[in-house]
Length: 100
Image 1 (cartoon, helix red, strand yellow):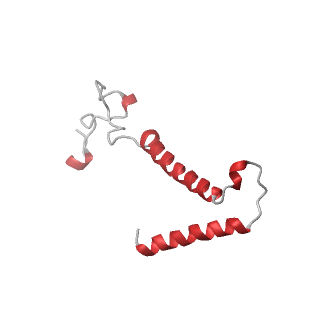
Image 2: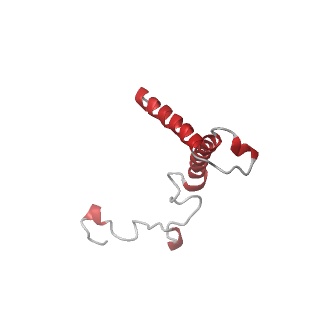
Image 3: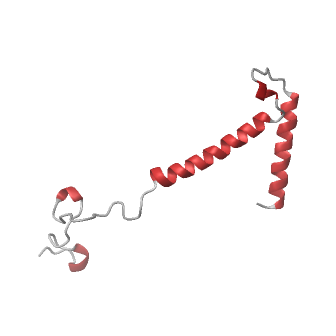
């Protein structure tokens, strides 16, 4: 990050801490009396969301490059594999569209 971005971030955090002291909260638990608790709680929550979404993206959503390719002893003529054998019908790009 550039120096001005760090300065802006520091100003926003300081402003948030000052604004929290100006607003009256009804404290129901002992930890809500800690100055800056909600600032730190929000920051930790945002960091947790970022790391959890990266983890989920890596292990839950992303697939390998060969995810849709046929693996193993799949029969190239089996329609369930989704692979068409180009030798069964004419290759229109190679022979100008004429069937054999």
